[in-house]
Length: 276
Ligand code: 6PG
Image 1: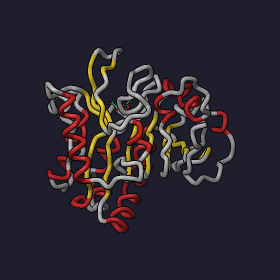
Image 2: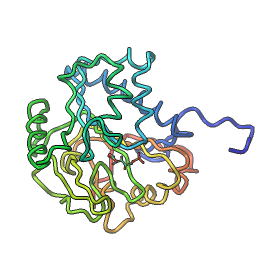
Image 3: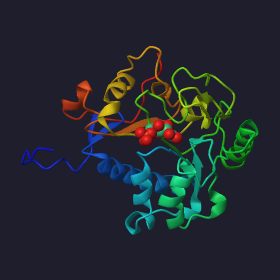
Image 4: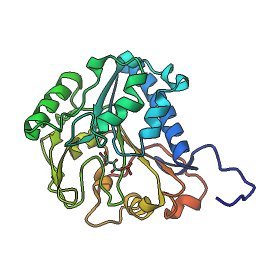
């Protein structure tokens, strides 16, 4: 990056309700780690636990690495944290593509979380449909349900692909918007593989949903998602917590096409706009 003489702003700047822009992917990871620690404190103080669904892919890797550092590790009461996954690839846990495997290497091996508090998706099982049912039963044992009968996570971390997919809810996939299921196993045609994923109603039932999005290749889709102009809507656009807050922590590259990214910071309340 050319030396403009001005150092990048170390603090995220708010550009619209719930949307904060950070200088680069490392700053997105730091801001998310900060948020994770704060929300853990709040949830554990109020409800005795912090129940989180983690995201896969490459973007959150630095976050998991940071949370395992002495600086952050000591600020979280890990025995009161319950970890789930938002989605998983149909591979064994030691496979390089495993979302669980990545989190285990970067975080789980380095923090004092009891193994019984870690709930991975067994998406490698031959009967992935059965595995999805079993995962719903595990969720039922740990989480409270909202009025609509869906489990209410304290936090769901999400990413977004350049095609607007989130978790393993892909555009054009038959993952229905309205379903009574909590966990589904779509065949993702573009990958030629099955995935296991939390369903949209479960994402919408969360107390907080936080998207971590970095990279210029996602700028156009992010613009459409936030300005709600895509038709049909991208899966990431459909995530609108019913009684919760939706947050975005993005880097300058991903925010480069947002009209409001140059305007002075807007006052935010994290409240989302309702689906029209
Ligand atoms: C996965 C993820 C997926 C991810 C996006 C973005 O299992 O791949 O859960 O939804 O968040 O594909 O991936 P990157 O962070 O690698 O760009």
